[in-house]
Length: 144
Image: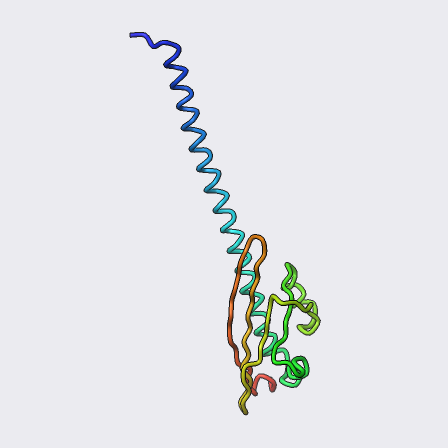
């Protein structure tokens, strides 16, 4: 039995439809993976920035410098930008731009040291990131 041209045309159209559906699926999946990868890279960078700020406060600043920087407030604010990690390498923590993205709050103080809380809240067009961490600056960290 011989196939007519109409049935071959229908089979070609059906196969093109199946291939286009498979192509769209592959494309959308790869775009989601790429977006997820970019978010992971950004979150990793923000985690590094938080750790850099904590270590800067704990080990590179004296208690007096931090008290002077906090002045009358118990909270200081910084702005997040793409180059904040490079700025932390190049300049002092006190030179960072003010903003509402990063907050360092003095929680309590005792004879052995001071407790601080750092809170990062970033809400850009592509990523939402929030992290809160407490750290303790002990008296011996000024002596080293």
